[in-house]
Image (cartoon, rainbow, N blue to C red; front, side, top):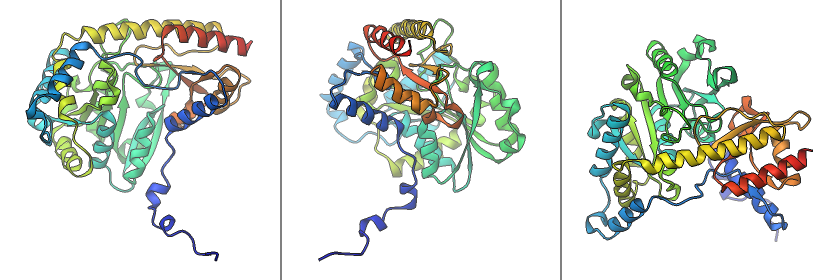
Length: 397
């Protein structure tokens, strides 16, 4: 007997959940999986997953911690003391930033947890979140969950893909409650300057908004000084927090280890949210993270050199194939314009998959101002990068 009534559960799903934007990285995985099922040999340059292994001393530290009975219990809510102390010392030694472990640090299970935690701690319904386009898609998704209003401002290629903060309408700064920054940047590879951070902090003071800097790619810089921490900026501790991650520096994306650092008032609110909404970072991962951050960090420097060389290989090859590739100064990706005649970034992404067997991420995933670009990952062996360039050049010619 038929039932004309709508499904019960479908009526119970929240409007908030039903209205969330799709996850572009899950969609990219699905595209690649479909091509592989069809028998295609795909070079996947869409992923941000590390393709190497963590330093052996970090693996040993995790294994040792797994046998330590003191780590069989739930970890402290705010973080394992050794881990918080290591983050504090990392900031002091690398950036000359002084942090109080008890009030200005929180251990989280990856920078992604930090993003959602800070946004939930600050944003009420209709509060304005400003982000630089291109932006990591979770910034928009987490703002949607908090029912905030997400307003992108364009990065300026003429300013090295930093936004021209002076060009933003002051009325937007008056409405803003949070500005989200991300340097070294995903996807453009831009690196912030002290002058840029100084201007952002001055605006936050003048217009009374907070700043969250996603510093997940700290240490992955190419051929120059380290990317500054926003917390180095005079006055930043009054308005800013920064997110850190073990994933990129030490190739442990699957371990889920990160932190929030900075303004004590924001940290207090973030801790209140964190205790109610998410799981604690695993104690053994925190212990391994402490060992890693207390190391001489030569493994991170070597990794940055490897990625910098890959950026040269892939960038030069793509330019020879006719693509306009943005100069990259750090991070894990290259950002390139869609060639003339190939339409939108979504269309070019599909074309590359079909005609070159190379998977990338369309720029449209990173904001409305970023259609017309695609993102290439550096996280494949060098041989795969050469092969990808050869395929793309052949397809374009």
